[in-house]
Length: 394
Image 1 (spheres, helix red, strand yellow):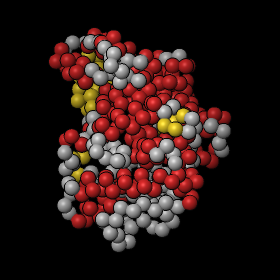
Image 2 (cartoon, helix red, strand yellow):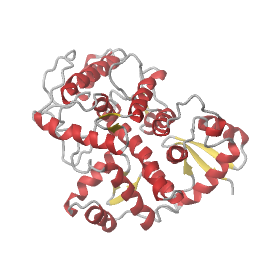
Image 3 (cartoon, helix red, strand yellow):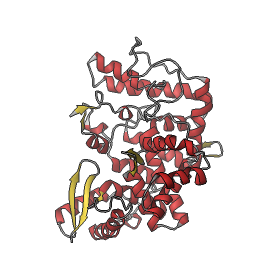
Image 4 (cartoon, one colour):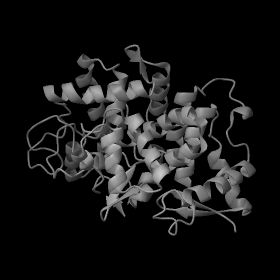
């Protein structure tokens, strides 16, 4: 087991991505990627190229860029020359199978927002919180950098670890191989980042932003916010404020910036331990709950049982029985390898349904615990990669 500050998982220390290729029209492109997998039952070079050229309207030569971009969003990966879908994309496919066109357009927004929060959420939310006002970017990002670095400093005494944290939690470009999906945004042309040999003052939290950054980075995030309904009429919308308040409530309400700490799922998936207090490890359920409430306005005082998507374990069992065979057959290349429905996939599916039906999923953890104790129709197995594996008894 390795602590997150020493592991090679920079995204758990700062949530940002640096691509300019592919960032535009992200919601629609995730929907189109989903449609391709649902229709063809696999992702291969030919249909992925067709997606890029005929659906995205881009040149076939941008294929590698799009694979890297979708990989940075944890939608897929390239393994031994094969494009392999991840659970976020699989959940989107299950929603596409069960919803009509209009409902799917709403549900995929929840899927998109989750993947943006996990991959780029700290840059995205801090820019959103300024109302995309150019004169506030530098102050907000500096506040974020200072607050997050100081938080980690409180838990790590070793100077070498503090130096690494200081270099990672920054917005400078990390000079790496072009195929590295963790490449940072266009900020600074000098060699910098966690592997640079420059001497730095670990108590200097200044953020330096280039003109190129102002031109490219904020506009992409603004476009995301507009397409998700978080930014309307040149100001943060009601949904946007609900999202910001919800994310803030998961960390520290006293902070002036927006921080997304590592999730329980991420720590489990990467086999990582941490010196951080348990209260600072985010539960993936809570992030998804904030997302559903941001879209569905479920913070209303009249939130009652009839606003709950799943009422009891019978509802949950029936849903698992419905989804499990669909999941197994989503991609014909992996049908024989899939033996259970990942719980994380179910959570994402429920998030989309919750947005469409305006019902909450806050009771899902309790229902899973009840399902484990009942030992009836569904077997529940603990899983490092997806929290639980769900199998219908045959």
